[in-house]
Length: 481
Image (cartoon, rainbow, N blue to C red; front, side, top):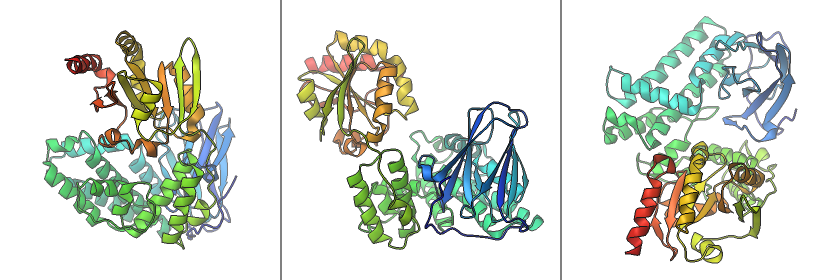
């Protein structure tokens, strides 16, 4: 197990102070198949599911696994693979002070049950973080729409947060709980509800407008950020706040700290928020193969100038990018297979189409291997490719994967039999394409380019809608007149 060094963690006393070590024990009373258990450790608000230095993995086939948690670790998540029946969400947060002893019973038919140090509080955190982010967002939106108390989105979210905070206070009074654990739990509650509220505010289909008008809704959302402005010890979800401000949906000024920002929305956050968001994004982007060494070095230098005493610096300075191919251009057909032409950086797709396709209509599919809806659209490609072939329209797939994901990108092309031309640029290059930036980067995204290189349809209908082919026919017919 690799443990991060040079990082400052808070150490707190535990109610169970008689033990020198803190131990997590997982029980699997009705599962005997092999399981892979992963512990994903945190550095004050940053949890990473990809970067190996944060992860300890264990294989077990028995009904019990006992793990000693390092003293330097206080918060983490648990992920259990190979048996999807377990209801322990990978997003559930755990907190263990020095000397804590926590047992989790993972019945495949029942929700997890906690025993030991801070079990009641641990159960509450599981309740808050149960399910995926999308599931929690949908639950909150549905509960708001069904709420008969009032129509105020602010009142609804604030009441939800305060209800949980009072429950945490009651647990603290009834049990001898570490005060650091209490602060952590309150921060998780606030963090998760602001994440849900902000995500609803950025949603393309915001059903809350059925109950309140958009002006009042975004005013309520801004009041929530004003109501809970303090950056919690283990992070406050501020990414949505920055994006909402950048889009002008809620008010906010920019703060330029002289860093080469990865995302423009970061500069709409205050200094402490920027520190956490930039560090988090750098770690995740590098671990997922999303940055090259030049970009990483530039970002770390800028980060160090802005935050010379940051607790995240020891980690950022140790990051190494994944080796991979950048700006790869290829073609796939069932007859020839996968044929790679080389590495080309096209600052505009007209350069690519002019070089490799010529004066033809081109249907562009912006996609990524990690995008579930994109892959679902590819289940409809046979009918589409017949139409394209009959009308001499080229098919070009532009991936938003990164260089470190070259093999995954290639494998998906082969597995899905994606006939056509394929371009693997860096997503930061795609974001500069004017016709792509104007659509807010949502994928899947189909676009039709004309023989002259101009965009005919900036955002086409999705194929699954049943309207794409007729839309293409109408556009081509109109252009020919």
